Structure formats: C-alpha cells, structure tokens
Image 1 (tube, rainbow, N blue to C red):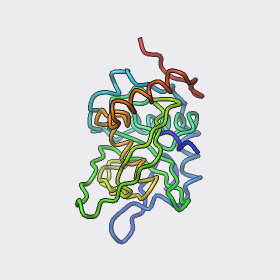
Image 2: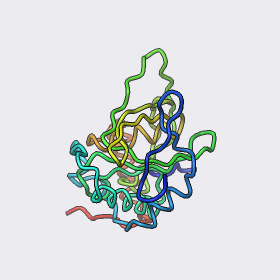
Image 3: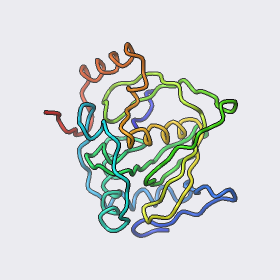
Image 4: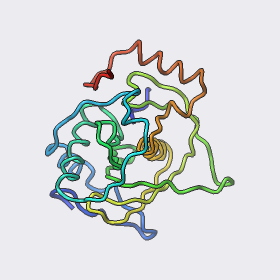
Length: 216
C-alpha cells in the first residue's frame, strides 16, 4: 500500500496482549531496520501483471527461503516508500505481506503476516471510512475508497506461529488492502468504473518514483 497523499535476529515471535493480538508497536525501528538491512530491494509489479490478479499460494514452508523473502520485502517497501507490501507485488506467488504503518494516533506498527484471513465484522459495528487510498502497484494514482475503520485478521508469523492482528483507521485500511492483494484484488477493483478509469489515467500520466517491472 502506498502512503496516503497528503525478538531480534532473523525474525522473531512478537508478544501478545491479553486478548491474544500481537503487540507490533514495540521496537519498531530496530525490527524494521534488521529486516531491511538484510534484504535486497526488488522492483514492484504493476497492474496488468498476472501475479497480481489471482489468489496466491498458501505459505507452507517457514524456513530460510521465506525469511529471505521477508527481508527483501521490507527492503523493497522502504525503497518504494510504502506502508505495506504483499509478496506478489515483487512477483512472488505466496500469501505473505509485511507492513510498516502508522495508525491514526501516530503509533507505528511493524510486522509480517502469512496466510491472512480477514475476520467478518457484524454489520451493526461497521463504521466506514471514506479516505484516500493508493497502491505501489498502481503508481502515482489515488482515489477515495470506503473501508471499515477497524480490521482484525488471523494468520501466521514468519516462523509459522498462529497470530492475530488488529488495527484501526489508516492501519486497518492497510491490513485490508494487503490481504486483498494476496487474494488477487487491487484497490482499484473495488472502485466504480469511472473512478477506476480515472486511477488508471493518473497512473498512465505519472512517473513512478521507484523501480517497477514493465508489463509485456
């Protein structure tokens, strides 16, 4: 996800709160730096690349290959100045995303989620937030999109441990946006035809500020 327009070592298990949700707000700078400095930045795939438009494969192996991928994803996210990045955005067909995202209170969240599943919220508790949204795979384009202002998901960390993650506001948007990616959806797929066309026009007229993979 693009920014809005306006344990150490090789990974580790995050602590959890009293409700079982990961505490992803501690030592954020140290953890993000460790991931990123081990990684190698890769170019970003853009809308039209087949890997972005199909459901990704489940992560089943939680070894060194995945750890290297996660490191590269953090490096790529920083190069592109994003707040979230899904594996298929660097061409890898696996259900994993990373995030380095502020919430609406200015609290930084850093983490990794494999095989995410968004939890359905009761209709009566849903509050929609109609805010600006962008995507590294639709560079230079932004559009307003209504999403619930709270999200929670289940999944696994980079070691294969079951985890729960929750967020509000902008961070909730990030969690929903990145999970969408892993099931083959971009945010522009949720727009009206007119707004989608406008977003693609913005992309065509703009110049990405980071390396991208050209579509054939």
